[in-house]
Image 1: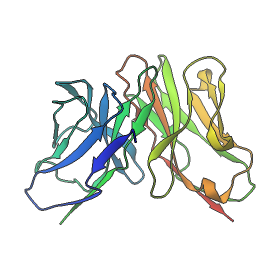
Image 2: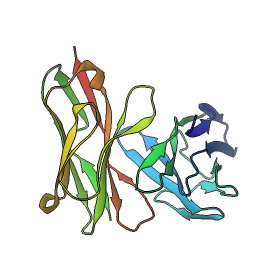
Image 3: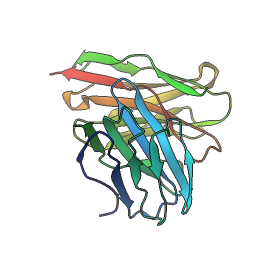
Image 4: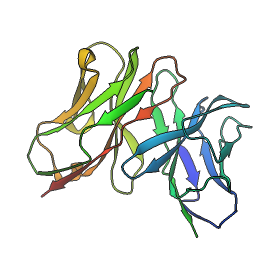
Length: 112
Length: 114
């Protein structure tokens, strides 16, 4: 099946801990995106990458980091500097031939 | 700053009622426009899109939206809702030549009573 796979589905973070959320796509898409979803605030862009080994900050990048070593993978690390990490995190990739983003099922991150 | 505003946070309707969800954006240039839907426990999925041409676009499940450039609006409509339309709806804007970035509205939760 082609698509975007996010793991884990649920993740818990302790104080001072860094955690990494996985996002893998087998759609052969160049561009990938990370969004954070909070109730009543919609989705906000954290980071995006238009090509391997390159990425840009979105609107709320503070406390997060990413890498893009492979076309298929765009992991997001929530660092200890992110003071309010509890949210639903969505990964997306951009289809060729248009500007339609396809989304994964999401990871729900909570703080212990 | 570029932003998208959805007028209603939560809408409650009975089955067969008509639906209109408002969406306005602030960006003076060319945009691509989208409505996404998130059914309970499911992926965010594309409902419909506008890139160019006829400003009235039709999407899946009987939804349509009208782009009114002079009002910076892209309202979503459905003549007769069903219980299965219960979901959260997001309007999103992609400013032209900004690397596919989407700016989302706050979302509107639609509850349809059977």
